[in-house]
Length: 218
Image (cartoon, rainbow, N blue to C red; front, top):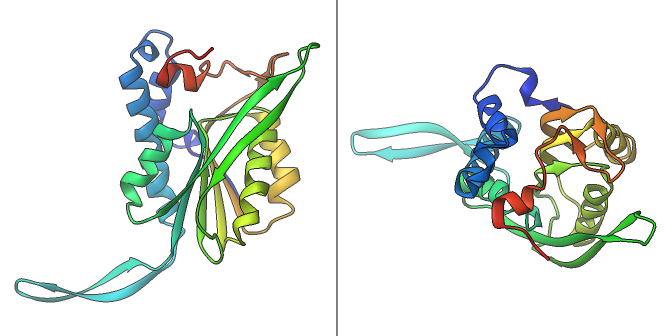
């Protein structure tokens, strides 16, 4: 399943518009908070797909039969840009376990690049629902590699791959290389843009999410 949330009316459109806005995004606190808000909205949408069980809850005046979450969740993200989005999921799935991946682009002299993974930490994924988030999905290569690396920690019951802004090329790549090969994987997109430039940056996109959230790096 591929779900684009900006294809429907909703407040997520406002937050993504602010993330893209060259003036508003200069406020790094607001940028981080908007990523967090998008994560919260996506967490709510994903919550509708999860399994629940009825449980009796004692109130001061009696007993109420309620539905409570019956899935074990793992929130995973790619550092550093993914941290605010990850926090949005953690705000809603506050009992979830967590996994973290360090990754960055290594550029060759000819301008091409490869993805360098430095560290992965997290729990077993066996029979759990994995939510793998990263704000930007450009070519899709780093997300595919992150997903495959996490599978070394076990076999999830279901995986939700989440991104705020994707290129259509990245969406098509993940569809072919991940979703069509794994029936228990869904892709959630805030919005999709048509173009990647020659440096594999999404156009119009929003710029470098990591720099905008945490400051420029060397």
